[in-house]
Image: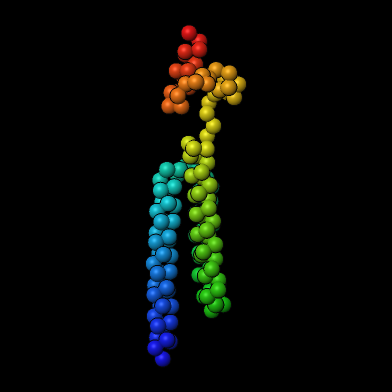
Length: 131
């Protein structure tokens, strides 16, 4: 009898931790989506993804009401995933870390000092070679 209570409390505590984790991830996702709309509100794809999310949410509500089946509410999760993936793609597209440098490969190889320190900017190395 004691073993069953212990297992039940373990399952309950794992369920509570899982619910808290899901709430945390949902809040982080919503904050990310809001920040994406604040930064990149001019992108059409964000507004299309929002329209898809709203349309799928309305369709899920109507279908679950008509057929009295809660399975159709999973369409809301699909729409949210579409919105989240679209925001992630737009954010990745505009990050500075993925942009290449503005100099050519030949310029980087031929006009860089091999013995200069790594913290010295490329422009200083170019000026020293030209002088």
